[in-house]
Length: 333
Image (cartoon, rainbow, N blue to C red; front, top):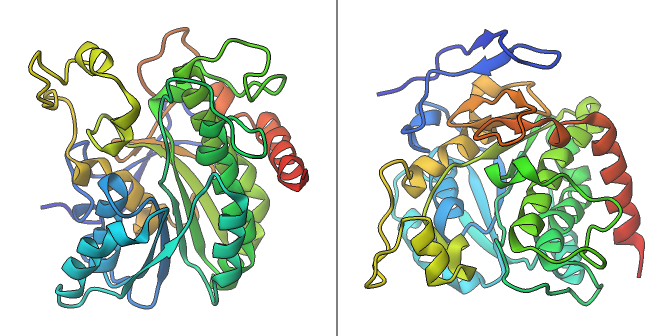
């Protein structure tokens, strides 16, 4: 059993601050990281909360007493989760609301429908490695539009309600795929460079980390923002990968059976770092940092890193430049 004991701060390899460590491990699950934490009266939004890591995040927050809104493209798919949590003694109320992050009209409708303070925003929804370059009606590459621009529009739209909460947290689910994919300010939508599914995905995940760094401008409003890598987990995120790719990853056999490798996490373990950042007292006042396996990750500059956070994803100058780019892009008809 794990408990929320005070975090230690480890000085190794941290740019400007000691690394924050916790008593949890890669195998700790989402409920364990906030065991004993009472979220009664807190309100949370979890994008993509109907399945996978999002659903586990919703479960942990609701079972701790929070009121949770599952923001998803197809609210009906969350019905089993809502029924499950309605039967849990002491769980907070769980609602659904339609949200398509690739559609700014949908994001705007969600924001206009929100009322009252918002304590927790978990930017969990995402798409990965679309095999071909696809564009939204605005002409934006779909992975960037969904994984970053949509979440940026949502966070900035909900900013007044996050500020109203007085001590709100934004959590951005990133990925280790960001390590070799800096944000390309010259060609973010692959208009000139050859489209690559993983470069597009990785760029969108670098953008998510940069969002949390750029959100330091909201610190005076009592808003903190942190990003994370959930690790290897089999969820619906892999739905765009073909069988050959799944076999190359070692998670599909010749008969098409999908089985996680030993180092893969369960969805509940994968959601643990999201929940840690969203609700643990260990993260009080911490902002602009990147976590994996329930620990703050070091900044890395290796050519082929296997973990940590890339320097390009936590660069304050790039974060400010991307914030300005996103704000301008969203204003462009």
